[in-house]
Each structure stands twice: as C-alpha cells, then as structure tokens.
Amino acid sequence: MTASLPDWLRALYPFKPQSFTTAAGARMSYVDEGEGDEAVLMLHGNPTWSFYYRELITAVAPQLRCVVPDHVGMGLSDKPQDHPYTLESRIADIEALVASLGLKKVHLVVHDWGGAIGFGFAGRHPDLIGRIVVLNTAAFRSPHLPARIALCKAAGVGPLIVRGANGFAGPAVRMAMARRRLTPDERRGFLWPYDSWANRVAVSAFVRDIPMAASHPTWTTLSQVEAGLERFKSNPALIVWGGRDFCFNDHFYAEWRQRLPQAETLYLADAGHYVLADANTEVVPRISRFLTGEAYSSSS
Image (tube, rainbow, N blue to C red; front, side, top):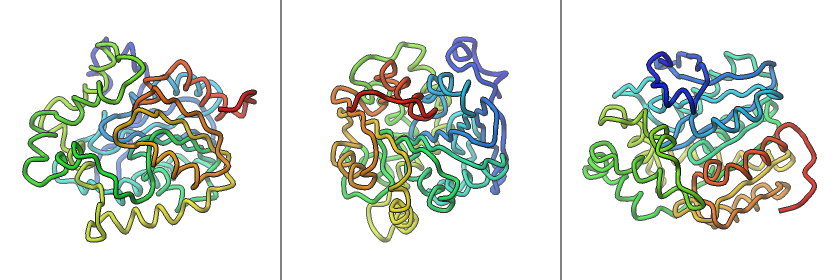
C-alpha cells in the first residue's frame, strides 16, 4: 500500500506500515516503529488516521516502541463496504492486534473515537496498561451531540453529506484547528484516504455508531467501557485538551478530570479538536516526556 503513496505524503508520513488481518478478514494497516514488548498504542478517531500521530511517533519511537493502527475502513486499511463497523468490532480488532504482537505492557494515547476503543481494550486487559494520555475524547455516554453531527448521523441525508459531499472529513481539517491553519499538504494528508464515496464508508459508519439511546446496538458496549474506567484511577495519566472543540467541549474535559483525578493536565484554551496538530510544538514534547518518564517541572 505504501508503494502507492505520493511523494508529498511520504515526506510527511515516512513510515512503512505493516498489515494485520482481522477476524472478519479485513486488512488493518498499522505503523510499528521502535523495538521491545512494551509499546505506546496510539488510537485515532473519526475522520483521521495514523497520520494524526506522525509527529508523536517520530518523537517517541527512539525510546519506546510505537504501534499506531488505522482502524478498518480508515487510513491505509481495507475499506470493505459490508463490514460490521461497530465499537465492539473495533475493540476486538485492537485486542487481536496487540495479542499478535505479544506486547507485555501498553501505554495508551487516545483521541476522539480512539478513547472508547482504547479504554474498551484497556478494560478487558487492565494488567497490560501503563501510562495513559487522553486527547479531546470520550469513553462514556453523553447526551451532548452537536447539531452538525446529528445531521450527519441522520438516516438518508447523513450518508449523502458524509459520503457524497465529503461533509464530515472535509470541513474537519479547518474546523478542528484553532491556533493555526494546516498547511496545504497537511490538509491533503488528512483527507487522502477519503477521496470517494466508497472510501468514506467508515467515516459515515463511525457517526452512525454514536449511541444516543439504550436502543442503539453500541449503547451496551459503551456502557461497559464507561464502567471500566474506574480501574485506571491509579495509572499515571495526562489529559491534554483543546478548549475550542465544538464537539468534545469542556463538559467532557470536566468529566475526565473526575474520572482520572490523578491525571496531570495541559489545558489549551485556544487549541481545537485536533489538539496534537494544532498545538504540536507544545503538546508533542509534553506527551513525549510523559510517556518516557521524564520529569516535568511545572504544573498546568
């Protein structure tokens, strides 16, 4: 797959992704940089891919192995049109990937949907989990759903917006940034895997999988993920939050402060949803220091 990457994208994403076949038979692409049976597992959300973590991988991999998958349907992974794109299937994919790699300790970095997926995995394998980094995400039920996302979730019109007009991934490269603008090639990089109706299948499925009522198939799975958060109150944790996020707003930040009261925090009032990209020069070094156990001298 990487042989087909254009030169401009290779310059920003200089990795050689590996492939893993899931239980459903889909090929999952993942970056695996560094060595050892202890690794940082970085999980992206919607509508990003492992490209989101490229600078953090480069910073951390010399000291800690980095495993960074593209969820099925996303990034460089297969995009089957009839796949069960559910939270449960995504947690199972991560379980299988980690097992196949023989990892003995996993440090979590999660963003957006990666929070529910990552903590879903962690709740089933708590003894594997070391340090935790939370980036503008959720792993618990919430009544909060912005009108824009509700429209993208609606039957009929939702797929037309998300898959037909690229009305989810397209606007995100601007709306998820607040401190700075992505460069033209950065925008192209985020959007490169999602260039057609077929290739946006999982972008739409992720939105539809947001459970807003107990009747939704993913409600039970997310409830179980939420219940498992209690297990991680003693893990070293860092919450990095962009305050200008119209979806994962400060209510989610406050919830995380309660769920992980031991966590260090870095709250960036002027940063957006793509906080790792928006405040990269500040956030990447801070997370890297945290993951590698280096002391941080000032509080945030």
